[in-house]
Each structure stands twice: as C-alpha cells, then as structure tokens.
Length: 188
Image (cartoon, rainbow, N blue to C red):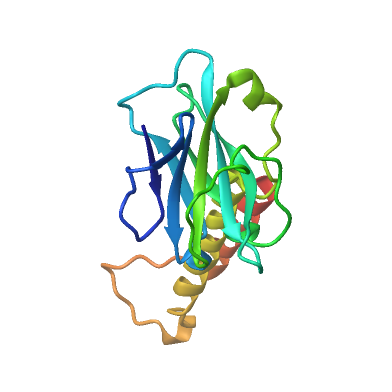
C-alpha cells in the first residue's frame, strides 16, 4: 500500500503492519538522512474519506521513541517529501503509535503511517520544519546557480589588452552579465 524512499538507498515497499490501520518503515542510520519521501504504491487506495498521517520516530537519549507528525498522504495527494534532518532533536507530539510494542534498535528511526479519517487529518498540525518548501529551495538554487555561473565565467576574464582577436568567437563583457544578474535579483 505504501512506499518509502531515501536518497541513495533502495525503495522500501514492505511496510511492517503493526496494527490493522498502522504501518512502519525502519530507517537504519537515520542520522545521515535529510529528506524522506512517503508515497502510495497505487495498488490499494485509501477507503473513501480516509487518508494516512505520516510520523517520524527516532530514539531519544534513553532509547525511547520520540514521534513527530510530518504530514499526510491521501488518494488526492498520494506522495509527500519531508525534511527530517532538523527533527532529530526536540519534543514529540501526540501520536497513535504509543501503546504498540514495536521492535526497534537504537540507531534505527521509523516512519509511521496511521490510516485515519480525512476530517481528523485536517485538524492535525505537523511539526513546523518538516515540510519542504519548493519555492524557497528553488529560489535558493537559482541564486546559487547564478552565483556559480558568474564566478565560473569570471575566472576566464581577460583585459582588452590581453584579448587575441578571433573572428569566429563572440565575447560578452563581464559587466553586462553582472548588470543582468543585478536586475534579475531585484525583479524576483
């Protein structure tokens, strides 16, 4: 029913069913994980009016599980990317996995999925820094890419006196690229 993906690792599709409506994936070596993708396999949809809340659990200093709500998946939103790198400290939240006797080892975190009513999902508040903001990361990527481009192009800069005439090549003055970059950043 569900899959779990971590960059650089094999896709996990065999969730451990710990109750009729609860599933967990083990995440070994969780300290090196920044993001996790949770998705529906497409083979079994949620029953009408149901969805899945997604939780992240890591062991605290005493080895006890700390559960934090990341978000949800539904038939209408069958996948989600969550940033978990900043969640490995802090307090847990209310969760439906408390009374379960789930086998765990100290260096293994878990992703838990609890099948719940959509109305219940709408009232839950995920931990603030779990969601991945595509707008901020895209803007940040674009600025870094443009900075890198300007630095790379500038590394080939020569003065007009050092230029060797070559009719088959076109040259763009570096100040034109810098001026464009300045107007691009101001307009966005």
